Length: 425
Ligand code: AMP
Ligand code: GLY
Image (cartoon, rainbow, N blue to C red):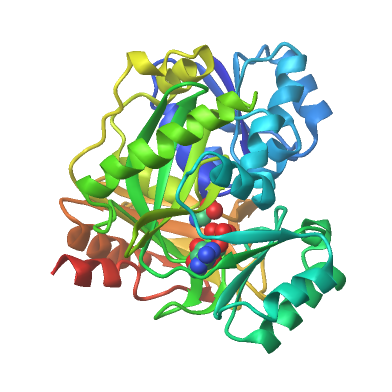
């Protein structure tokens, strides 16, 4: 098959790496890709939101399968556009991607179908939101309704901070039109678990679990980021939690979307919090996580192309997903200053002879090659990834591997997986 993967991050590098291993893959293109993706795919300089150009390219190359990695194009209808042009595509259509695109939609869906989540209210008027806050319990969580690069969530300790937050989101439009509608939510506590699930519109099959580290600095301090590191599996996701989620969250979500006339096909990312009252949904995403994909896919033994085909054909019930029994960890190498302000285009050196063997992977998140020289090209630059027989070994190996990559403003967290290891003891 000729496959076109749309996207340019570490997630797409991991997806491309996995697709390239499939005997079903005859030729792999990526748009726009990055310097790492270029090692496993032919990159074409078309942006993820340039639907007309993507479709022209797909027609010209007789693409058999288009795969869309990121939230923005999915929420804007990339799958619908490919399908309208007669191109088979993997991912949710626009009417299903709304499960990520609108937090008010997803909260209302969970309420209607009794899926466990934090209590909440939705507001389109700032004065009404503030009046509600006057009688609320703190801390409290404010969420811009729409997509905000994972940054549209504010946790407010008191009324003063919450009022300022409402103004930032709804009046100053800090997250643009994503803040026209505001969700105010009960504050939950507990460890967070990410579970990515393949879906064919009727059947849902969870992959192995993962655990993100969203804050920029060690000890879960500092601003929220897209994710600074990840481990799989999560020790907090017990067999009992997995059974509960299957019956009370995954299957009901699938059925709810179908009942609403929005069957979900693609990868549904369920962000969970393991509270004292059991697992609750923090958020849904309509795609693989980044960097969750970088720790889940190296553990996947099944053929990714085959699974995607079953999702599109509605026959996911016919296959089993197989993951290895070991573990995987990824440490993000970022440009110092991320996610606030940082410099790009710094030269990178990668020690030869390590990555691509023995379960060590260097997934590129933001890199570019100019005149043969590898340069940084983003806030998150690399996902240094390693497998191991258990979490401790995977984490130790991933940190050892961070030494093989240098650039002068390299920044990373030093405690990825540390809490999980403590929990295991
Ligand atoms: P979201 O984009 O909804 O996943 O929110 C981003 C992050 O904010 C989550 O990963 C949590 O760490 C935190 N968060 C979101 N909702 C809540 C909540 N109701 N209670 C506590 N923390 C939350
Ligand atoms: N790592 C979190 C996300 O992809 O949204």
